[in-house]
Length: 228
Image 1: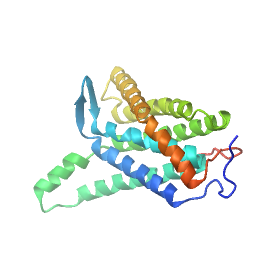
Image 2: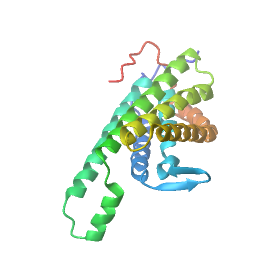
Image 3: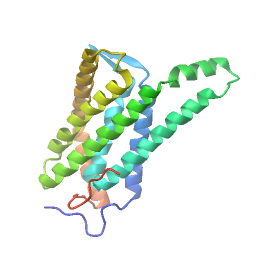
Image 4: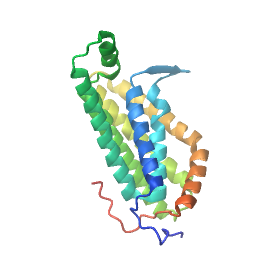
């Protein structure tokens, strides 16, 4: 079994890791802003965030696969905090009295949201990405590093489903019927997994190149899996 490069300890933060973590956060923030726009794609009614949010899981897979669970959790907590801060700043900005009413109205339309939606988004992201990283990390050790495709898909499918279900329940319970929540959860999580499957060849090529560039391939043997 390939072991972690002896010249680099698990948990070492590199410029390349910081780049991935920042990209991870940017995609999350963009997704939570564009989620207000609905688009029709064939028979599916989706939010515009559908085109960026699955990439959050792709980056999560890459970080866990290359750098290991502990650094993946560092990135998850950093981006959870970033999204919470962005939500607070947008709320605070809307409370300020604007001198340009059209601008104030446009911002209110785009950025006003309820506490339930913000809470649903934050909880769903954290739980979904934690589960994704946990499963992928455990499977990598069990598979002795082989079959990245299997663990990437096996970790993402339940994570996408739980992520979508949590968001829908927290944000829309009592607004949508249980049947609508179930239908949306199944359709969006399935489509997100198909999306990730479609981009997997690129993901695999980037992961292989990244491991060679960083000279690291972390195996989470004997680590603490505490999420905090």
